[in-house]
Image 1 (spheres, rainbow, N blue to C red):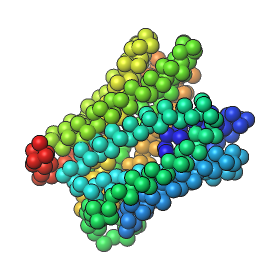
Image 2: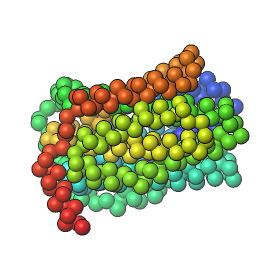
Image 3: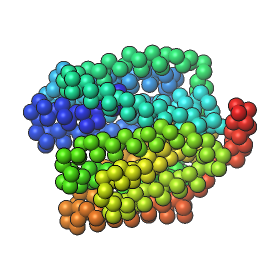
Length: 390
């Protein structure tokens, strides 16, 4: 469902005669709404009695927003639909993580989050191909009708999880300490490991978010005839890496700890930025995107897993997800503006060098300040669980 809200919406609105300014306005409004709603979305999941129910309502809101986009492509409707989509997304992402943690507990959460990342990657790839075919053979409007209709298999899949299979205490990160929401936020905002981790991933996104769009623009100028194909390959290749390796990342994090895996993900980013400066062959550019797949696999698993470690016993796992998500959103929002300014003023090579340096700063920050968050007894329990499964 989420794939339908990617590049397809720009294509759809352009076909309806929208100016790029108006498209930019509604997309910016969605981005700002998503940023503002990250923490409230996590708090809603923490306060909910049924994670399945919250997830279902959030997915229904996302489906409704797609239907509005398909039926009423006028500015007020599209603006409202984008904000509704942002609200639903801010709830459904922490709800899925909470359901996962409630199902398997901390000891097996690494592999579970890895499997989540694998299936998300497969879903993104299949949906992009399917919706591209729908747009080509039918219409751009049909893409959003299909997106809205995907609520049916989504709810069917969600219904297969019984409510008694989800431990509500584990889903919220343990027992709450009797604090009200204001006090809980204040406690999390003074949690040193959480703040360090949020800062690390913010710096990571500041370097990461603009790299592919910047390279896509360069490819378009150099090889306009092959630009669409090459950019599509640059998107698909990382998804294949994520699908292949995410569960293994989760298992490695359970066995070796979080810091070594995090450092691998952070190290891949500046290397990728430097390679984009020197590599010009189209095939090699696609190969460089393997490093993006490594980063995506690591962070797709380690972000919820590290937050679960830090908030264990607080009952505020999902609120903490919102705090870190806000940092990720800020970093991603600033990244494209910063990279665009550097590229226009100083050239694309300097822009990639600047992004690589920011990525290297994130690596240093993580290496110096980020503590290991895995509890050793939890790691031992995970090893026993895996050996029993083997």
